[in-house]
Length: 101
Image (cartoon, rainbow, N blue to C red; front, side, top):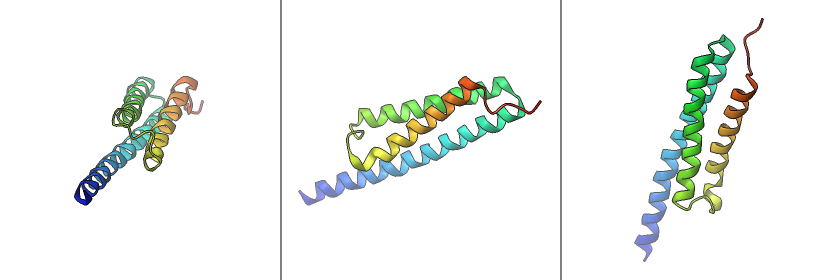
């Protein structure tokens, strides 16, 4: 019984570590979207933006599929993916930041 609980805890730590890496990679991708946008390369901004949106949406979907979205310990990951998704979407829709004229 105790080893089963230990196994689940170890499994969650592994998932948390992997998803933390995905969140950080998604954040770097979002920062690239902002940097590319400020340089005025519109098509590349859209490509990286779509990748950032997809990673964020899939991260949240993964948490829902493994039923971690209801647990308090996983809420920070859910919110991180949602925040990056919303910031990327807002940047793409508003066209900001844009290069200085």
